[in-house]
Picture 1: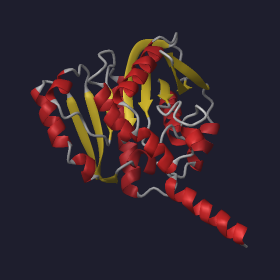
Picture 2: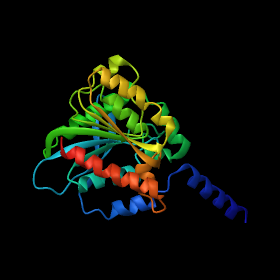
Picture 3: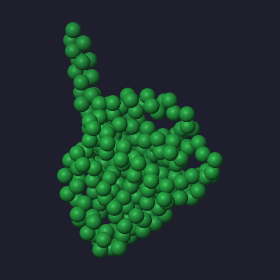
Picture 4: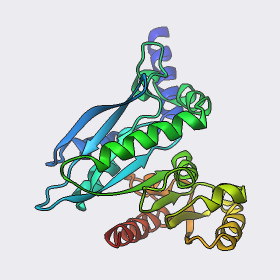
Length: 266
């Protein structure tokens, strides 16, 4: 009886700290596209990356995806596959590569607070170096047309906006419910358009939009934020879940449509 109760308690604890993603994993396992894991090296560091290839005749634009605060999850890999379905090469790096005691990353950390703590400990310079290496890797793939965009969610949305200040090669930044840089000097370094996607019921993030608009406008940079009414933070994931509410579901559908339309113009 004690063992049963302990197992139940552990199960409930896991449910509370880890986003349920069985549906994301199930969809991913049915994908007909070529999916693979690669290690992108820079200096003495290796970044484990998930790569999804489209089934297309010609060379394709690449998209680098920056994961949420939950790390490189099944859902993020599912997003990579869905973008590949739309015709893009997608590289999704695990920024927690090497963070686990055995040298592993997100999967080895086990989710929850361990992942969030590890992410909060990452140094900006390392994140930038990882992204620079992954962008170069994506651009150099034989099937890539040389154009690379970056998009991210939550923590990754903020990192997308920040990375745009540090890399002149990317063609666009797609920041999903993440805040922007607050220093004019950083904003001045941005050379690509930045497109924002925000949930209407997410004031923690949305309160930063006016400052981003002001700084980007002052610097003569292109920043186009869109707020999806009624949606919450993380609507791209929540809106895909089987139990999604109508607001999150609609925001996800509208966000996907806009994202693909914008990518098509790069």
